Image 1: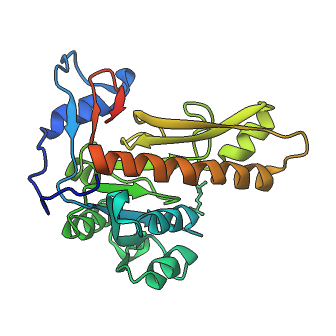
Image 2: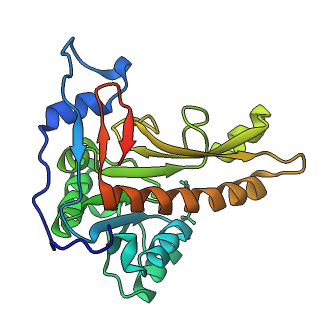
Length: 247
Ligand code: GRF
């Protein structure tokens, strides 16, 4: 929001068990508990603080870095984390003067220890939103419980079609004529969180996996920048039916 006066305001608090139930698909919800609440999420800071997680080339990160040069965007990248060293995504962050951190799974005794370590590092940056942008690890329950409704991911397909690591390849193999990208709130499942926004991309007759994925990534960057900015400026809600409204 342009001209917001307060430098910070309290984060809305939500009960983690409510948040977990809201974010999960019906089929994954335990028990018959009725979820009556809505996650009503606002950034606690102006501009909103983004922590971005990457594993590779970081073009989505770069799009956020570029957008946040405009103060009117309403968000800035305060840290970039990775699960591996020596990737272009980290170099992009360093080039922009943004602090970086790396937690490799193999440097921790087990996956839970890794999850706790990355949670604690991210929490230290007090993010309003954690953006998984080409981060090739599943974040665990300890991480997600620390930021309920505040972890988003971008996926190169129109979910629920083609979840997983090879979305463009799977879309081509199926023979769909239209695919696209999805921004969603991360849950413990694989690419099954509440959908925030989607954008369609046509499949061309001569596409291979790379050409299709690159065309999707153009749409993905635009969608990510658009919706992260809107969330940062106005907040968002996730209701009991997992419907996301970006204000
Ligand atoms: C994106 O298509 C993302 O959805 C997928 O990996 C790609 C990352 O691209 N998981 P980049 O690292 O942001 O360039």
